[in-house]
Amino acid sequence: MIGLGIETSCDETSLGIVADGKELVSLKIFSQIDLHKPFRGIVPEIASRAHLEKINLLLSEVLFESKIQVSELDYVAVTNSPGLTGSLMIGAQLARSIHLVYGTPIVPLCHLQAHFAVLHLEGVPPLFPVLGLLLSGGNSAIYKMEKFGSMQTVGDTMDDALGEAFDKVAGLLGLPYPGGPAIEAQAALYEPSSKEKDLLPPLLRNLETDRVAFSFSGLKTAVAHLLAREPNISVPKVCYHFQNTAFDLVERNLKRAVNKTGIRRVYAGGGVLANSTLQSRLRKFSEENSLEFFSPKKKIYCTDNGAMVAALGYYLFRQGYSKSFDFQVSPVRQETFL
Ligand code: KG4
Image (cartoon, rainbow, N blue to C red):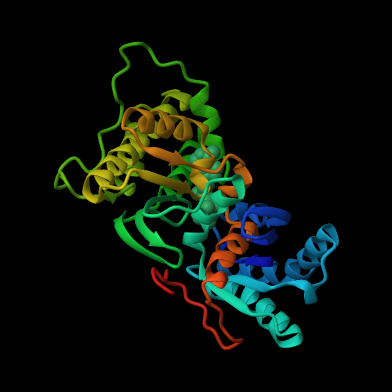
């Protein structure tokens, strides 16, 4: 079964073609980072205009590369939540157009769940129940999933997402946008002493001991105070400690989510998983805690992309889920749609 996946929820325009939910045939991504860079964040109007400009070109490219005709597609999966409404509408319109011309069934889906389905393109078998750890520019959460098309939140962020904290702290340090890769590169330059003490206070110290929750806005403020107190402090040192403090909270939450649900199989995804220090910490943590841990091997699969949408679309379509052209888009995540 051949499926097209369309992703336009935020600042990547991406189309992917996938065979049988497990084999990548073609993937094209246009990243809008350079367009948003001057504003140090995503400007919704710029995002939707850029999606509109690029989407047909990307469609031609994936079709050319895969040597597949639109009429041969078995389904068109498209992100319809969550995201910027104007951006979601561009992807939705392409799916509707294909449906109207070729009668191809549409599989609208929540792209947060697609971040986990991308792992099936790297050989991870689709087994449930599973915990989904999502760390991106807009989300920091842990979900419990018992089937495709449904997830329950175990813990969410109270304020900023982790990627957002990377971006804001990079701004404080005079590093480029997006902050994640820049902070990771700076942190790697720092050599901590064997007795290195934490520079920044631990996050959510007073939270109930069984609660799973993220909060990163206090960490950003703590970095701002540190820089005000010590304006000449080394940037690599601050980056190293920022990452450590943030990742400590990720591990603590994962441990709590496992204890709460009894689920020991974990899928992780989202832009922040491109961070090698986080990946290796989570792998070590999983070994020590007897967890089965899976995260994307290809960095391109961490970020929003059309292949993950096509992969999740395959499993949903196989279970009989599809919509006609009058489906809606929503800025709010839809935890259950099947
Ligand atoms: O999933 P994603 O591509 O898209 C959105 O959520 O929009 O995530 C983007 C986020 C940005 O905040 C970026 O700074 C962060 O992922 N990111 C990273 C790294 N690469 C990207 N954060 C930490 N380390 C990285 N290497």
